[in-house]
Image 1 (tube, chains in turn purple, green):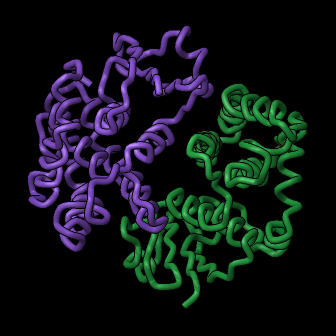
Image 2 (cartoon, each protein chain N blue to C red):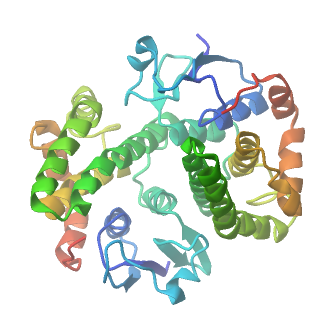
Length: 208
Length: 209
């Protein structure tokens, strides 16, 4: 399968896809649009290829796929990172959607340029996400097997959560899971998986 | 135990799940919290909700699923509304995510109180959602092999979600979106003719949202 992935020159909401492709041993080429402004503008020559005018977008076998979670879930299935059991697969969907909700207040802190206001926004994000999300995720993993969100083996939900923890540490210098030991261990284990570390070690070092 | 679906007294994010269960002929308890402003979930329901939000579903064995798309996709899979082919299944996911985007764009103007500003925003949202979404969906369906499905030749949850999305936005904002889109009109009529869905839409509570 020859895969061409279009996004910005950033980790953003595309890096989980890149991690999963690498984990699954699926080779891919990348087109990375420059991040000159934040939020960045999508060049017309890429935008015109994208059904909804947005990236990420992926081309393979003469077909295209859009919408970041549709793409992530598709390659997760290809890489055996989605459970066969439809209830467990639904839990993965649920947890990834919850991670997306968890990200929102943290992105508000990322977008803040004033240093003092930034620290305030970080504190607000902590408050907004501790009880509602991080405590819940911590409890889910503990009640499961202590190492995975769903089932007894790696799923794309583990990868997505681990990715976000690392992403905000790079962006804000803050480990959002610092008070959640089980999540901290989960993310370290995921990010050290050889075929995920392979991507992390070779990816371009970008701000976002 | 029967399936329990917890949401507000409204169509919103739970309605596609209700349509799928109705299509499949599956009985469920349609538990509805009053939709007042400010929007609050009653404590006895909120306590059940993994992430403090609705919709939430409790399955026959008591297991829970939260997050509206996870719930809808689960029942879609269970009732043969997700294509077997992985790529086609992914295209359904793509289309549903885009439908959610246009619904969100229209939702944002709901809270505008100033009538003049609201009318202005309404014109803007109509223009942008036509260009970015409705024109694109029309083209997809018009080019499809049978002219009435988004993916493949049989009903998928993407068809159901799109029909609900257009129906819901139309009802909330009192606008006939299908008038300009013959293929979407055909797709919509096809979905609404499905026995279970037709019966549900006829008997469902009439709510603003």
